[in-house]
Image (cartoon, rainbow, N blue to C red):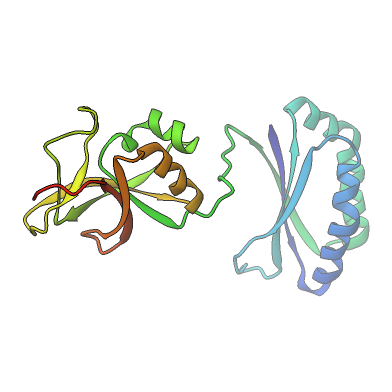
Length: 215
């Protein structure tokens, strides 16, 4: 993908008329050339010393060859239209941006802190449970300790010790409420989910032993 970016500073005396014309006429006409997949217009949040209001209009093309075809077949005509309507009331410069990689946020609200100390820190497990990898931060849970016994002899399990000197180091991740329910399924009956307060002061979910064990 390649982005054809047009940055325009428009004089305030024609700003409203220009903005309406760009949205209702010019940008749709550029898209109608068939050279671009999509377009967006954004206001640049800066106070220009020279005055005026600055916008960035970004048109996305599949590749450089298609963009070059736009230059050859359509660009001059489109630029003349802008000049015909707004004369010397604007300044424009153009740049080309090559898209290296696009990232899309997952469509959920990550509002829950999850304190982890075992396999949930492993990327392959995260992909299984969350269908994504998580980025988090280190924190400590005081008054808890890891049990000497592991679940099925393999998986660590935490228990309350009521001793301030005991602590467990771990990683904290942000998850959605729906994802927390998926973690419930992953942890299974050997663990129960409880709310804890971490050393950082953050309130988080944590999984501890579901059976009461001696301190």
